[in-house]
Length: 310
Image (cartoon, rainbow, N blue to C red; front, side, top):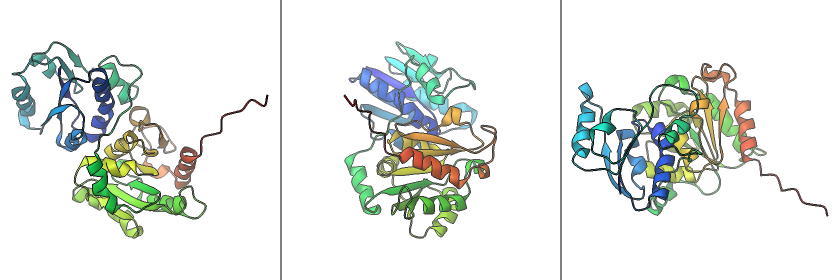
C-alpha cells in the first residue's frame, strides 16, 4: 500500500498531523508513506517508520510549488492520498482513495479537524519520532537530574511572553521549595538570527542555563531533548506542540491566539491563558503567579486510589 500524505508548511500544524500519521501506521503497518511538507517540518518525519520519501515543498511564485509536487507524484498510482492543505491537488494525481481536509476557519481544536479528514474518532494524539542516536547526540549537552526547558520564541512577536517573566518563572520553580527545586534550566529555540534575538535576554539573565537555541542539528535531536524535560514552558509555537507530542509535561502560554484551537495536545499538556478575552489578550496580562500555579498543578502527584475500608 502506498500513501501520499500532504501536510503543513508550519511546524506546529505538522506536529498536530503526526497523530493521524500514527493512526495510518497502526492500521496499515505494511504501507509505504510519502510525506509532502514545508522545509521547517521536514526533520519531523526523518525517523518516521515506513517513510518512503519526503518531498519538501518550497513555496514559489504562481503556485509553482504545487506543480513541483505534481511532477513528483503524478506518475505513480496511490492507494490513498491525504491532503491536509485542503487543496484541489489530491484530485490531480491517480489514487484509489482521496481524503481532503475541509478548508476554512471553524471552531474547535485543529487536531479534531485533522482527524475528521479520515473520520477518525477520538482524534489521535500527536507523536514524535527520534532514534537512540539522537538521544546519544544530545546527552553530552544536558546535565543530569531534572530539567526545566523554556521556549521563549514564537513565530510572531505578539505571542511572546516577556523575557523577564520567563526568568522569574525559572527562579520560582527551581528555588528551594519550588516544584522543580534544584532543576537545571535549558533554553530552546530554532536556528536563525531572529530566534537568537528573541532568546538573548533570557540567556543573559540566566547565565547558568544550557543554551540550545539553534544548537541542535535536526528536529529528532530537539525531540530527544524534550523527552528529557521534567517540564516544558513555552509560547504558542511549533516547539510547544513538539514538547507535548514527546510526552513531556507541557505548559503552553496563550494570549492573542486561541487555545481552543491550538492548545498543546499530550498526556500531560495544558494551556495557560492570559486574563482577558480568549485569543485577543496581550501576553503581558499573563502573570508569573498563574504559570507557577499551573506548573504546580500539572506536576502534582496523582492522588492515591481510594481503598475499600472493608
